[in-house]
Image 1 (cartoon, helix red, strand yellow):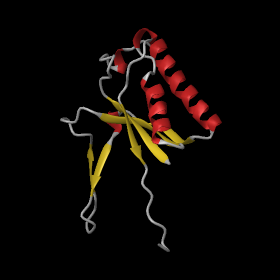
Image 2 (image 1 turned 30 degrees about the vertical axis):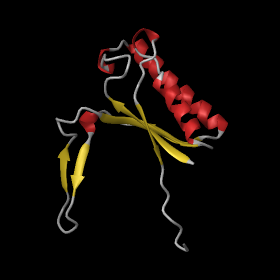
Image 3 (image 1 turned 120 degrees about the vertical axis):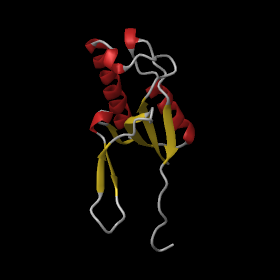
Image 4 (image 1 turned 90 degrees about the horizontal axis):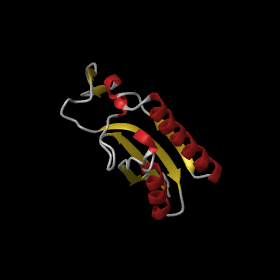
Amino acid sequence: MKYMLLKTYSPAAYCDTAISEWTPEEIQAHIDFQRALGEELAKSGELVDAQGLADPSQVRVVSSDGRSAPLITDGPFPETKEFLAGYWIVDVDSPDRAYAIAAQASAAPGPGGKPIGEYIEVRQVMSAPAADQ
């Protein structure tokens, strides 16, 4: 079963300090943790893909009616409080394993090296039925 684990730019359970206020060493420790988690999942054969995403200031929102040129605006919308920061796609044997990986990701270090308790959204990747079904 494949699951997408989504992390957002938003306050975490144990940390409401914006990453822009962390020290360079704290940011590096957080990045190192993310890389190590990715390497661990790759080694176990569970990692399908993982990516961090650009800062929300670089977001563009595209809409189209399918007939005329698409409308491209700066995004995200100012009233939005959460922005997608990155994701992992994992291929695991059970939902419980996906939850365990999400819990591990949630405990990423923040200020002072303490686990921040990020809220990680876990969603099963749905497959389209095969053409012959």
